[in-house]
Image (tube, rainbow, N blue to C red; front, top):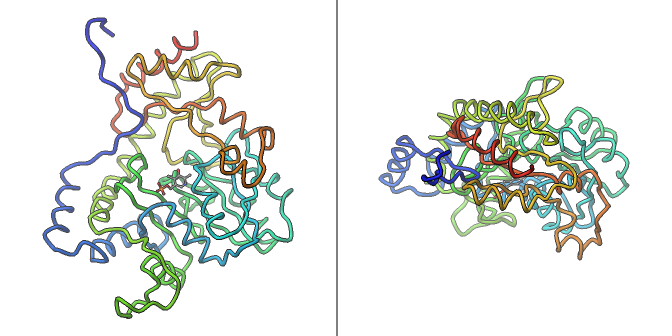
Length: 376
Ligand SMILES: *Cc1c(COP(=O)(O)O)cnc(C)c1O
């Protein structure tokens, strides 16, 4: 790095938007059908084909999708739903929206996903469902969670918002196991539509329910001012759907670019004393690369590291914090530090580094060199 030239700043994430996006967005704009049009159907159909789950319903965000999915499972006030404390707050908030109680279970130290044994230990007679999160794109232990669900008659909603492109050892892509599974399309996600989400539904009937609730409770052939159930405005615009269709055409390529960037990082991060890379794929499970999160050594000054990286033009984030220690959760449910020690330890030491399909090997090298220096 030359001293005289300021290097380009490396941000956390960057969507890849090209001519195809412009072309399809223009097609929607010229059609004049900006909502509930053919581009929406096309995005749902093509996403479902890619995923291997044919009944997909596009919604306005991942959060909206999770909300509709737990409702479709019949969540009710007083229910308990088992979920992971190491997640984006939305996975737990949707449980609270419906007057139910999120019950956290600590995570597996390697995969960072909910530990099925910890989950089994907190099942009660009020437990109604499981809401596993495939955090950082790594597949949750679905076989064990499905066994737990069978034993206790629980529904399952999968938060796959970080996990496009991941797959389970027994075959299916993450989100294609026949449960409700929800994806997100915020600009940092593997598919970026600005705002947006997709609900993979177990069957056509479930999709019809999601389609109705996202559209103010209208039935398919009802008038605009007729509503057969309580609904929401959780529609995805056709403009956003156009972005989704374009991104989907390049998805496999973009996922391969993310995996390549992760391999560049792995090589360099493992060489830094005390810093751990994300866990490698194991037992046939495959990560869908979303973020690159390292674990700093215990006792490292993470804020100092972030400041030093920032001074060298490199963004990094303390990603991600645990949900149960967010102010609202502490106050409402009485959680305190020490409740989920593994998740808390991981959250305190996690650092997300710049990561997106078009990051170059030289950029990754620069980040690794700066990180090593900032810890020395
Ligand atoms: C991104 C994300 C969501 C959904 O976020 P939206 O901004 O509502 O699309 C949900 N859960 C997790 C774990 C996420 O990372």
